[in-house]
Image (cartoon, rainbow, N blue to C red; front, side, top):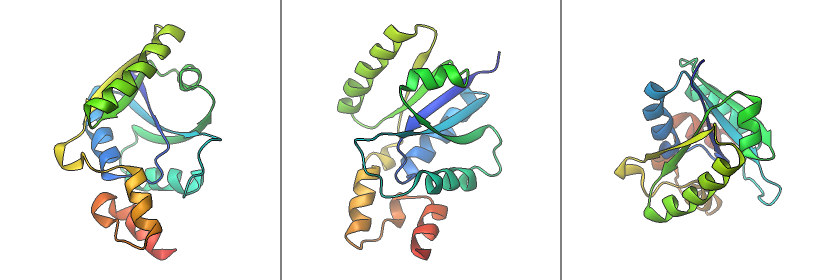
Length: 157
């Protein structure tokens, strides 16, 4: 049975921190689905289609990484795509506390799906989509925090 992993998030936009976690998870899994979760409580800066395009472009030479959009519970989407693992990136201890609560709930809902935590590289600790969006909204240069594909796409708009 292939080791399929879901890396859920908003990816609004995709950051170097996201790419770091995906790249370091590649040796662990046969397939990583970067799942763009739609959340009605959040108003994204970039469309789901744009975020999917970025993932496709960044990983155009890596067939084991695919993007997808989903709604509803992450654990339900894992079942839909036969993912037995959920990947989460951790920057700080506070991230772990929050993510562990979600992982515990997911484990209660489905014991066959395991959450895997990877800590981010220290150089990406301060990289967060929220900060990148704030920089962009205020006319700043977010290029140091995002992949070149994302930066070039944003410049063209």
